[in-house]
Length: 358
Image 1: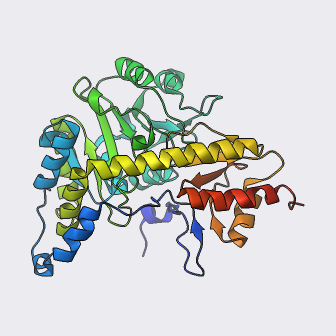
Image 2: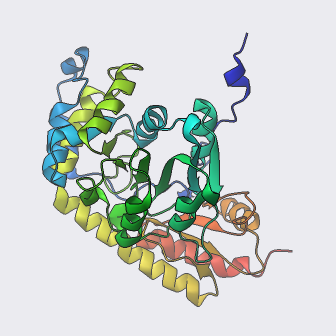
Image 3: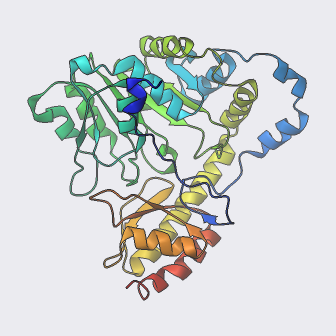
């Protein structure tokens, strides 16, 4: 009854979205702030009768808004139903195991191996450097073996550690130009450097983004990609071979509005960065190790406490953080940055953790 492909899959497990009680949710990197008030005003005036019509399958108006915001033309931009879907199309269009394994960091997005299994792409996890940064030099060398592509987030997750553009440019200069390099910038607006400006220099570079984090639209599902027009056409070919209408009419309209309200986005991301600094400094003062984050979360551990214990104890006290039961990062927890009041509440609980593990 079931295909060979299905039997081989181990699905990705997303962060908890609990229904059993009310929690302080610091586990899935959602924004603590609402989206632009312009979106609320738009929704109050939106005519539901428009939903009887199919949306524009190419999201042209939205792509033009993005083009204006990012200084590109619309033929350099692809739009999809969340960045996970965009990355799925990237996998199908560009990563072919006949040319070697796909390379990505040892600790990164948990769904990368899932996509490799889904599309039957062999892969290799490249260990992080001692400072937990992505080791681009090791990816280039790859033990002397060819690879079918490279993908990594910048900043990386769950670490939050970011790479400077000079290291990324060094990678692009040395990596074969007939293999695609993909950089996911889901968290770049919280203090990292974007590689979008490098697209004109490298025809094999794809940069992906999401509206879930800095735009406060995780519930909307809207992602996008930048690249040279040939790569973008390949993504549209993939999409249109799967589902022509992936991005709904309402989603496209809200995305257009979100792209326009740059002042709102800048103010909210700046506030999250300030809270991240406050929270990181406070954890350091309590004796925690906190990796230097350029994202809307921190990755932290406390000597003598297991990550599982921290996660379970905080959950029992009504606070959700993210724990990864993976060798090498098992003692860390990933903590989303909420409001300053949210983080102050957590800081009231963290000193008590040290006194209760047995």
